[in-house]
Amino acid sequence: MKTRQLGRSGLGVSAVSLGCMGMSMNYGEPRDRTEMIVLLRQAVELGVTHFDTAEVYGPFVNEELVGEGLAPVRDKVTIATKFGFDIDAATNKPTGKFTSRPEHIRAVCEASLKRLGTDVIDLFYQHRVDETVPIEDVAGTVRDLIAEGKVKHFGLSEAGAETIRRAHAVQPVAALQSEYSLWSRDPEADVLPVCEELGIGFVPWSPLGQGFLTGTVRPDQTFNEKDVRSWFPRFTPEAMKANMALVDHVKAIAERRSATPAQVAIAWLLAQKPWIVPIPGTTKLHRLEENLASADLELSAADVEELTASASKVEIQGGRGTGHEEYK
Ligand SMILES: NC(=O)c1ccc[n+]([C@@H]2O[C@H](COP(=O)([O-])OP(=O)(O)OC[C@H]3O[C@@H](n4cnc5c(N)ncnc54)[C@H](OP(=O)(O)O)[C@@H]3O)[C@@H](O)[C@H]2O)c1
Picture 1 (cartoon, rainbow, N blue to C red):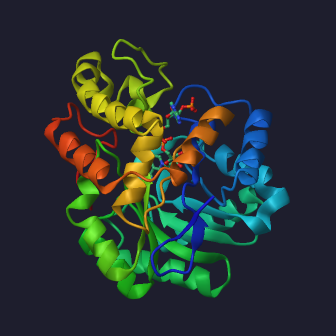
Picture 2 (cartoon, protein in one colour):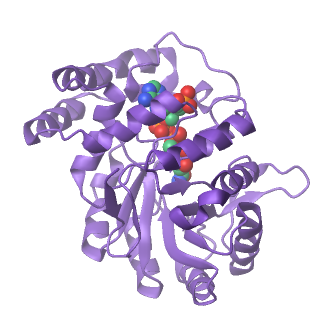
């Protein structure tokens, strides 16, 4: 497995890393815990050195799963987790609000360390910008946690260019994690340029378009109520039918390169910048192997150009599922 540097942070990770959210939520029922622990360890054997989780995944259980799965190889891997979603203490359910008060960040850090069974968080992201707390206070709190040895690197997720600059001035940001794929190209406008200027790595989430770009989702498919795609606007039957035009372009390049559409979708991201590290999520070994192989799929400049141009011509139907189309 090739490795990449997340900007100028000094954090080196597998070029394709693993998003662990789907093991515990968002794509139907949580998967079998024992099987997921086996999968995490197989990922390490296949060369994955960086794993992405968050307090809110589950909530809580995904961090515990990742911590247990990686415990035997903890010194060989880096773990990213995130704070910033408000979680109701009585129900353990996210309230839909964001919270990044300094005392809250500290409490999440302690709780995450415990759940991960580790003494340091390699990369601690603010999951969503909390407009009620100045970003300088958030960055300052993470800077203090770094000084105390509890955190190694600071990250932001779904933040806008101005917020990134302000945070970076207080504590250098190692990585920006936002949705980025052939059908979600918003970071190209302002966020990728600011990352390049400041030497910040970029971690695209949902690099496979929640599975849609792999060509395995049918337009007439229905989703379980615990699957976010049952309410995401891009996954209505009408939107999927229209959005298939993009998948057709991905498939055309895949055929030409004797690769799969998933591999082309990931390779397209890798081709954008050498400091981009996608984190495709999967719960299946054969798909993990397939996704990791994209690190070795080098698309020609002409392939990348053609795919970028043809993707730009497809008017994607339905907004992203975040409910917040604009960066804060
Ligand atoms: N910062 C944020 O706000 C944020 C938000 C969302 C996600 N994330 C992170 O990003 C990671 C990845 O995002 P994601 O899981 O939402 O989306 P994704 O990686 O774009 O797609 C995951 C979906 O694609 C399927 N899949 C994976 N590989 C496949 C392949 N080769 N062929 C066909 N289907 C395939 C998976 O199903 P199977 O499991 O059945 O393979 C799953 O349904 C998450 O795990 C999480 O760590 C971060």
